[in-house]
Amino acid sequence: MTPPAHEVVDSKSLLVTKGLSVSFDGFKAVDDLSISLDSGEIRALIGPNGAGKTTLLDLISGKTAPTTGSVRFKGREITRLREYEIVRAGVGRKFQTPSVYESLTVFENLEMAYPDNRSCWSAWNFRRSDEVVAKVEQIAELTYLRDRLRDRAEILSHGEKQWLEIGALLIQNPELLMLDEPVAGMSPHEREATGKLLLEIAKNRAVLVVEHDMDFVKNVAHVVTVLHQGRLLAEGTMDAIQHNPKVIEVYLGH
Image (cartoon, rainbow, N blue to C red; front, side, top):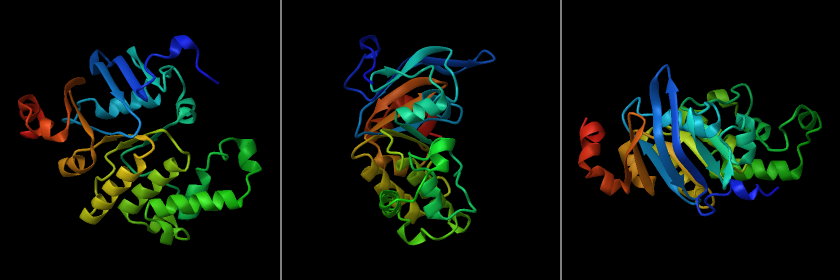
């Protein structure tokens, strides 16, 4: 269904936040924040601990309701939608700690996330069709898990569990993928592979990633947004951010 005309504000940007703020007991975790994100873009959110990065993801995903401001996705106001409604609108999110079904195989984890398996009725009537198998195998290939499909998730490495959770999001075909510290705890090889994965993913969707690994950010991000005390401190390419005196003072210099 096409959103009402009054909801469409920016047809060019996939995601737009305007004047977004949220307060907890008088403390502004996010303060009058306005950003926009385009399809095909990898945007990195960086900044000191407590800068508001994860809270911003909470606001976009509907986990936290803003005090003021708005979030629009594909021109549609989603600020007051429930979390599952935002997921169905095309926004996928991965938290810092991998959340997979460890007693199930990699195949079963991906199969569980298949978009036709969302309600009790559809889950009861769900059948492992050739289409489902092909999609699971396609996502497993993309996320370096093709040879682990029959293995239980509990025996995967930390990095492989991260890839499995990303795969579970990708199988739902989101247009915006939000990742919170996806390479934390990974080996150098896994970090490099994850960078290549994100570049491939972003060919037909937007990726918003919170990360502290500056080498990783430099290798994957098209645009870097720096937050400090809940506000926008700077925005631009990684090269420009690395030479920004304000960013050096409050973040990179430490």
